[in-house]
Structure formats: C-alpha cells, structure tokens
Image (tube, rainbow, N blue to C red; front, top):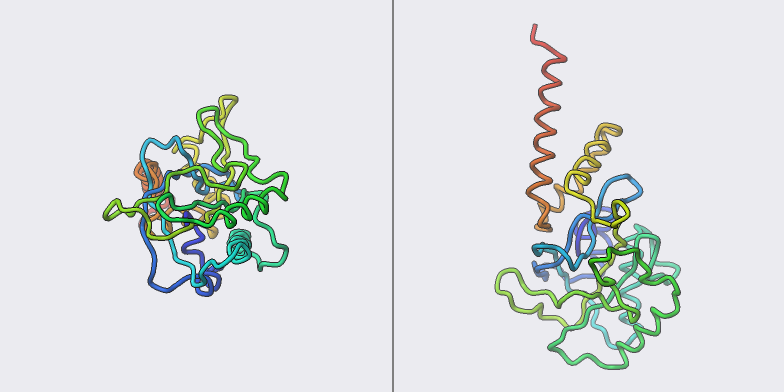
Length: 245
C-alpha cells in the first residue's frame, strides 16, 4: 500500500474486513509523488526511475488464494477501496489506473493462477494503457504484472514472505513535452494553492499522514522543507496583520 489506502478512515472497514490484524511489513518501494488528482494536488505512483527507493506497507489478506476467483475477488475489493466505493461492478481498473499483480520469484505459483489473471486483464482493452515518460518502461505489462522488483523488508532486506502481492498502479502526470515527472516545487506548491483556496480542506495532510505511517519517498525532505517554510511565512503574515495592542 502506498498513500491513503493505508490510513484513510473512509477505507477503515475495508482494511478491517480484508486483512489480518497486526500482520504487516515495511518494505522498500520505487515510489514518488507523481499523479495530479482531481483536487489539483499530487498522490503517489510507482516509478522505476526513482533515484532512491521509498518505503511502503504490505498487509496480509485474511483469506487465502485457493483459485483464480479468490485472486480476482481480492483485486475487485482493492479497486473498489481505491475508488472509495462498494464492490459492485467487478472492476479492476478506473480512470486513475488499475490493480496489478506481483508474484514472488522464489515461491512456486500455480501457472493456471497467473494465466487466469492475464485472461481477466485482457477483457479490459484500456487496462494499463498509461501515458509514460520516455525514460521509463510501462509500469504494468499486458499480463497485468507490476513491473517492479519483488519488495524487500526494510529491516533485514529479506524478500517479503508472501506468494503474491496486489497493488494499485496509478497513472502518472507529466510536465512539458519531454514528459518529465513533476518537480518537488510543483508538488509542494500544489498543496499550497489548495490550502489557500480551501483552508479547511488541508490537502497537504495527505503528505503528513503518509509520513506518519512510514510511507515515504526520496522527495520527502525537499517537500517538507517547502511546506515548513510556507507555514513560517503564513505565521509571519498573520502576526503582521494583527499587531499586538
């Protein structure tokens, strides 16, 4: 999990129903802030070109995967949670991106399970059809497999002790004709604008909640510095506008 799937209260029931309590792993992950959301602020994406790995959370499903239907069922629940909706239409993709699969390279995964997943993915012609940077290969392949390395535990560098992982792969947003990922300034000032337009909304809480949950990127230090500087500026303006009597 990257971003609000892990901590958003709207998704608390989904997490409580679908995952084992107190069984989770902090792992390395190639992630960055890179998707411009409908709110005008940035959320997280997987990105193989990151200069430094970030950290993400892996939770273990309550239900074991006995056959392809179990796997697809979990993916549909995950997609519905990402959309903040109840599972009802069997979707594994939406306008934001898609649910993708990752299989452990050191476990024996039944061939028919992976074939059934690839067949399910093939039913959606737009599945995984993301815009991408010329510097990066597609983050999800035609068989619905997330194109990152199997995650390692942050503490020990051991591989995650599970067979399969499901993740939401969000489509990135780019700047300019060169399709560059947004800079930390672009990302931080998007939160600044949002806070100015809707002071009670506090869109930048997405960043701080991720930090609190241990979900981090290589961009965090620079973003935090910009946000902290902005806070100091707001504090000074408030003082100047309301002098002591």
